[in-house]
Length: 424
Ligand SMILES: [Zn+2]
Ligand SMILES: [Zn+2]
Image (cartoon, rainbow, N blue to C red; front, side):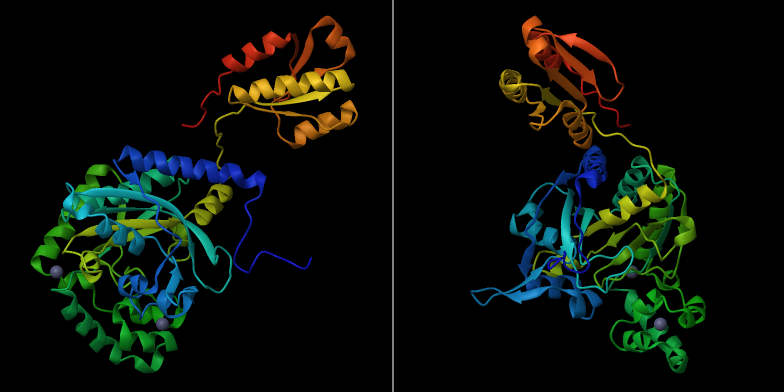
């Protein structure tokens, strides 16, 4: 084959569509049940939005963005994550003048030039939410609960929650200088990435996955010991409010998240045995971000999770789910006269909003094979005999039941067919 999908991208073939429909539908339902409303933003934005919004010392902006000049000479970047775009939209549309908090969710494709490996894609999809204009930690607990409830509802049961507070612009500098001082004693044993982090982004030292850096991380000073008193009470209240949701959590003082803009609450959800290596959802508070993007000081908090990774976990756990059972009728026909009748009836059924199509002009057996390949729920067979009696054969492919039915009977059957929601 001359052409393949680009590295790090994949096709979602018809057989896998059910996972996507299931995940997207459940995500919308759960987010909406908490009062979040959907927002969609463009696939590309002004490059500076991400430089200002994510930070130019992050891996994402340094080496992972798809950035290009358009024909007018403007520098544009394919969205590498959801938050900066939603913040931009919040400010652009004056949502900061609306009653706060503003609760938004999104389902969108993102693009990062990453080294392709298991579970990492260059084009991937995210489900995320953002809550703006509320600094009270009840909303931190709420955001965590949205992601937790979604994962539980979608059938990913074996998850655990880790939380941490990384302080704010008042208290974090003190912590960062303590951390830097500590790390300077270990500079010979650090990995090259950590040596760089020590210079440009010390908090991310705690995020290193390299084995030889782990002992240094373990005995590093902990951020929660340096919290100022407003951050400390925010942190204590968050834990209190989380307890009221009934979600069990673990405090992980090395949790910092990869992006520069987080403050106070950060959290991750992963299978208990695969912490850090299979993070399914992560998020946190970013109280300085909107100001950094030119808006008024506005608190914000949110999470993002990769839909591909969610689906991987659904498959890993062999979660049983059914999406709306749909009525799909194929008309099998024997003879030219019968074929015309199937064209007429399938057209009528489509006008009722249901799916119906005519079988291929081949023998009956071949038509039946096609019906099962197409996942038809029912086949209606019409031949010369059926035309003369006016009684057609209706076969349910799900259970094998077969009955005789008139043309009017078919229309009534379709009108009354209950799609039976089976999710929940
Ligand atoms: Zn390291
Ligand atoms: Zn503080």
